Image 1 (cartoon, rainbow, N blue to C red):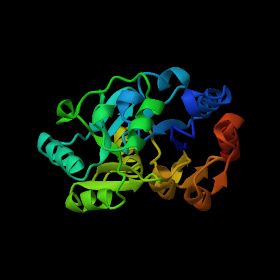
Image 2: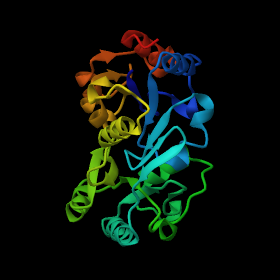
Image 3: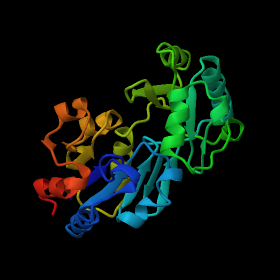
Image 4: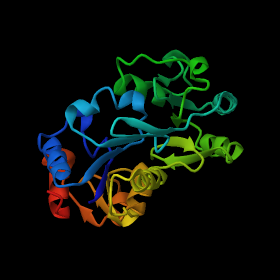
Length: 268
């Protein structure tokens, strides 16, 4: 049995939630052959669980870069910034004029476009989420797991991170954007958490090791899980860092990349 971990954007789906028909077919075949198929995403549950389960069947969801874990409908863990931590983060963002989307399990939160510090984030929000209803920063206190941010000043995010080094880790998403997660959390750490849970569940007679895991992704926030997995697969249109460390490079999403990857693995 293998544990197959899938990123979402650029891996399972292309723009506008497009998924080729071959992907759910591949997932179902792999499961029928005894493998577990797990989503491992930087997205929080609020922008995953209301639509992705309708496109393809999965055994579990590791959301928010490992801050919330689900397996077969059961929530295994959930890390949320405390109210005190939330206030410190929000004050720091405003201090350094950093625009952010604070991501939670129930909602996402950001400043209204007319009060944002940067035109870049204003355009990003309007283009990527034209109809999304946002909560405000005040509502986010004690209710968010991680955040995505941008600042015009290239020194702003590093300075902010230096002040919160004991609380946060940063993932460079390139072009000035950063994904910020709780200290010690990543797409890799949650893989270990799931393996430990499965080995302690009594459901699987053979011990599962990290060597039994396969990670499939395309962007820099996938690097921790790709580096940690027993086998790393890059999608055909991945970042250069992902391509450089992959054991196998499959086709792009809409060219049946997932199906071809699972064929190469021998899982289908």
